[in-house]
Amino acid sequence: MRSPNIETAVRLYYEKPEITNADIKELFGTGETQTIKIKRAVKEEMAKQGVKSWLPHSINTRIAYKVWGIDIDDYEKRLKKLRALALET
Image 1 (tube, rainbow, N blue to C red):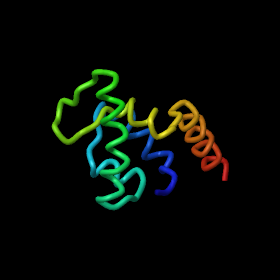
Image 2: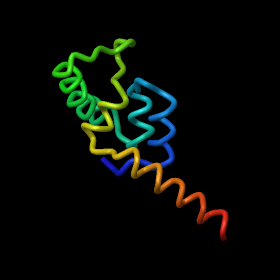
Image 3: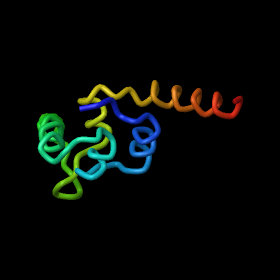
Image 4: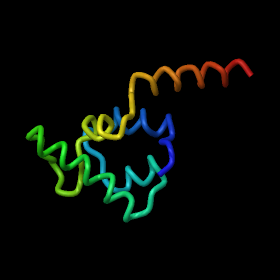
């Protein structure tokens, strides 16, 4: 599994309260098997916290990012800096 794309991570976090397999694949570039594996850990954490999904095959985005160690505040700062640097060049 590769590191998530910063822009995609920020966009998904704010666009979707729940993410699907397709979103996870876009975020990490994973195949079906790896996607299901990393999604399983999130489902377990959701069960511990008593959080249910609105859609049967989706997972809570906030909990997923926490389980995967994605610090959205850090990603936002990085994205802001990347955009500022792009404007300067």
